[in-house]
Length: 422
RNA sequence: GCCAGCAUGCCAGAAUCCGGUUAAAUGGGGUCGCCUCGAAAGCGACUGAGUUUCGGCUCAUGCAGGUUCAAAUCCUGCUGCUGGCGCCA
Image 1 (cartoon, chains in turn green, brown):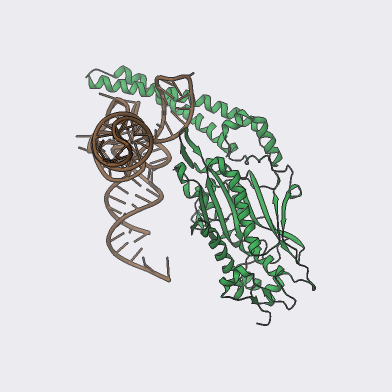
Image 2: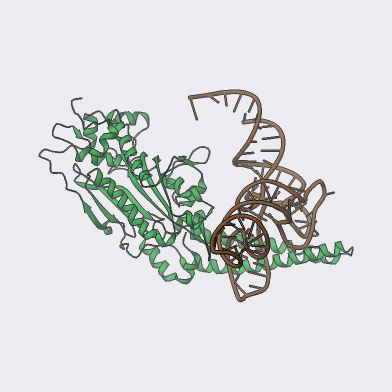
């Protein structure tokens, strides 16, 4: 949610931002409703003020043993008026709320304007692309040949869009997760093991609801499976007022993530790229508004550093206004290289949401000038299956075995290779 | 899952039975100031939210409703916590 005061004062900036982001929202209508709402609210408060005054007068008269009949008669007319006004205020507030919650975050000035991923801006490229003397296999071939990824089994168990990691494949994924978590916690991040079933309030806070409900799995109890650990981590301090010295808060968690991927079929469905369930280590920062810009750079560098330690070629993009997520003001996507597909695949998305989520969650911190909204950031650090794709494909040898990156070897019991003849 | 009890500030806890002045007595904690070489103690101020023309006004006793001129207080539903029983990795 963006600040209604800001919309009031800068309607043209907001209109342009909304358009750049590919949304069609009637800002003038919102402002009209907002004006009506505030006028009506003031009138309602005046009525309530009168009611309070008369009630007190009645009490005083009764205490003095005098008759309050005429005052009570006057007072009796008020509840009906108040109720009517209240209904109107509630209606306007709801209308305002519905438009407000449909407005995406305002893009940062460094975000390229464009309608889709074509407009994304590459800001960094790292690593040497592997130059194989043989035809590199796809990750699904490697996975099958080495018996470490079993797609047929996952189809049998769950349908398409899932995976079974098996034997050293399962161990390798666990190695990645532990490596990521250890990297973050050694730098002082707080590791969290959160629920992966959450309520609608949490999903409203991080802005998956109400707009994107179709992307979520819903339980019969009315709760939802998390699409990312961003949801529980960011919502840890929903409806709280924090002390300034408690900021920043750095949270990390490993969780499975669940996405219906409604309407996405056809391309990119082969292998373990687009999935209904996948494992991810997430980073979430809650920080002082003055620091979020710097914190985003730091978060992005953490994700990049992980890839460098694994020696996986990547590139970093700033997403365009049309490609960015709803809650983000600025997003870096980090993409890892697939030698088989000869292209980069997204594996991390690091976003600064400013106070957009904090407003929805009502998470503030105390300052001398009153309570202010915090800023929230989230980023993958990192998503496991997509990293497995690049890890397997980049580290394959001619005989079909896989070199294990040095930093993962301690997590694999010292193993240096996953061998084909095994 | 069943039964019972409970839900007020940063914490503990009054007011609730029997509706009424201004919600928060009292204690603790915290912040700031005075005092001090410094600390402790002592003394003083501040310590729910929103809004404000800085006079105020509105909201706020778990949440949502109802009754009433008026609800922390009475009624209904829900949620959460605690205890007991049942089930259980």
